[in-house]
Length: 330
Image (tube, rainbow, N blue to C red; front, side, top):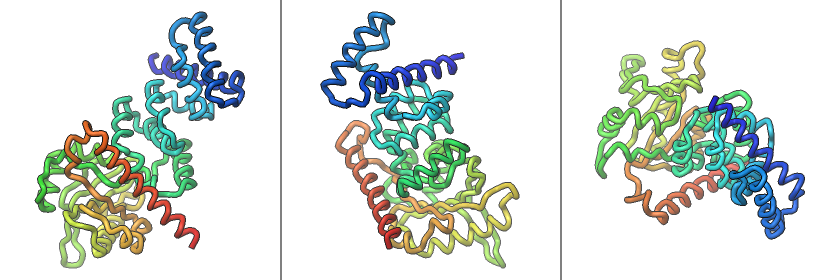
């Protein structure tokens, strides 16, 4: 019952915003004119229908209909997202960023508080899809919207925030692994919805040699095993061969008939971007990401630190997209 009421309220607000935009403002975006019209309309609606139609409320409704212009899309989202969810999405200026959060919120059924945390932690900028071309981002979001089909680029992140592990400045790979296992619930939440734990130090035997995968996970929606290797230093080119060996063994001996090919994640303290690009790791199903075991002190109380982190992530996204464009032009 509550879901139906929420959906009805959301669609009411969308229709009000859409009618104001089309029938009253008629595309006239002059600031003074729009403010005057909305102020007058607010007084009339409040007088006739009571609370809920203040000037700021009407402004949000118009923004809502502009940001989510397709009726069918809003109808589908409103089955899961409340008006409070949409209010969190409206300040996001980039359409693809806004669509990403809306669709991920729908498919993973985030609460409003969870959505707020995802936005403040810059999940979109940390997700691999943000490094792709706008055309590819649009295509993958469309597949998610129509078929609930997640791609690895919508799942994998960079960097991962592992500050909850409580690790100090100096630690070894075994310390990192042990800390992850102690905080496995928090770790899986940071990895993203759909991940489940399978094994630690997964032993595989090839010829007469034994190898051990640090962590083996499974992603339910991707229907793939995910091998995870933990490195305390910077990425090295030799890690590719090691991960490819693991993935081929898993594909041959551990993959179930209904599953897709296994994927690999190499978590490093630092990345070597040009090496990663030359090795074409994405084509091998391997994702390399940095992790942060400590965020800047008092990050939540210092806007300048948050802004610095945001600038770093935005720069990384812009650089990746620029390299992608140059590669396509070449």
